Length: 121
Image (cartoon, rainbow, N blue to C red; front, side, top):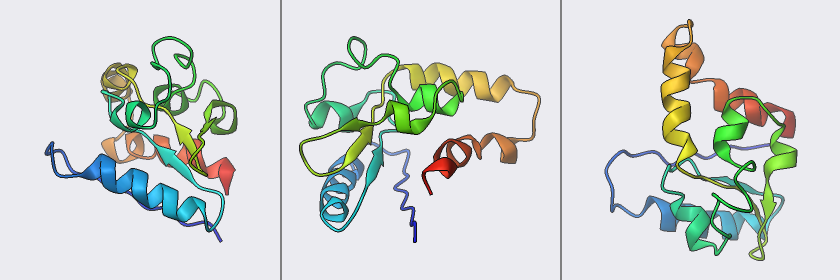
């Protein structure tokens, strides 16, 4: 059975990244786990020591997945911590604007991440 856990809060400095990484580490020891870094600053990506997403992983990011350009399976990076990561970078800020410009209801725009992750079930 596939479960999804989301940590969401617009306020900075409340421990979202630390909690998400620790939770992914714990869940990664129990089974296959993917941490999605949805932060345009790529905080989880940087904290895990993944090379600058603007170089080696530029095309392997949450932004790419949200736009539906490539399947998440091809974008995830295996970490040495027992789980996979979908890297975040500042392309996410541009994707937010691109999705807002789509001619679709806002409720449908919110489903782009769900759509990108569905094939992993």
